[in-house]
Image (tube, rainbow, N blue to C red):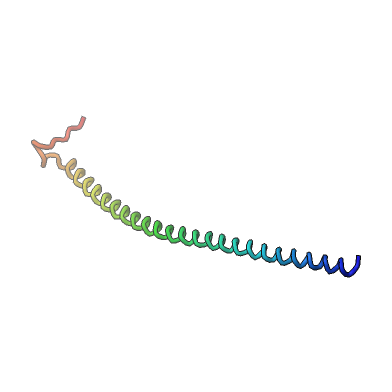
Length: 100
C-alpha cells in the first residue's frame, strides 16, 4: 500500500465522517423536537390536572356544605319526631301514634 492508497482511504473516511456528522446532527434535531413536543404535552396535561383538581375541591366543598345542611335538617326532624312521640296527647285528633 503506497501513499496514494493511504490518501484515498483517508479521503473516504473524511467523507464518511462528514456524512456521519450530518446524520447525527439531523437525528439530534429530530430527537430534540420530539422531546420538546413531549415536554409541551406534559405541561398541558399538568395545567389541565390543576384545573380539574380545583374543580374537585369546589365540588367537595359544596358536598360538605350539603352534608352539613342535611345533617342539621335530619337532627331537627329527629328532635321533632322525638318530641311528638313523647307528647302524643298534644296531637289528638289529627296525629295518633298507636303502639302495636
